[in-house]
Length: 146
Ligand code: RTP
Ligand code: MG
Image (cartoon, rainbow, N blue to C red):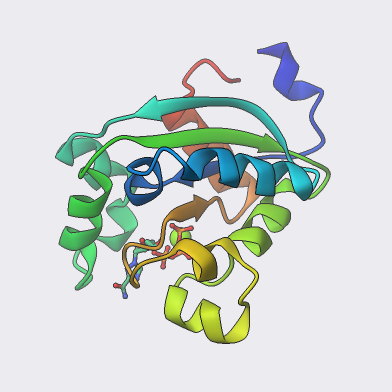
């Protein structure tokens, strides 16, 4: 899509299954995203098979949390979004905060993981960590994006 070429920077955001299980939460998250001047370029609902979860999280295979991570991410539908802004990757990761919600509540209480995260694994959000991973991850959910 030509559209994405006009964006200064894009990133992949996931609103994980615990967020999407409560219909009141995704609208609140969209508000928080827009309040940080991040544009929601597009979004879709996703329901993963075990295989799809395993492929996306292949780098974590063998870690103690790998199976519960895949179980979490296949527990129900979640939302995938393309976000855009001049610093979309950093801005979105700053908004979601540290990986572990308990630590986030201590160190960065205004972040989304501090507010909504449940446990170290069930941390409610994902954000790409670099330009390369953003492109790879966006392709997984939006194969016609580029
Ligand atoms: P993400 O990739 O989802 O943005 O998260 P991250 O970089 O902050 O964290 P990463 O280390 O890449 O871990 C990926 C996801 O695995 C789950 N996790 N559980 N100790 C645990 O139980 C644990 N550690 C990580 C989280 O869902 C994390 O987002
Ligand atoms: Mg990561």
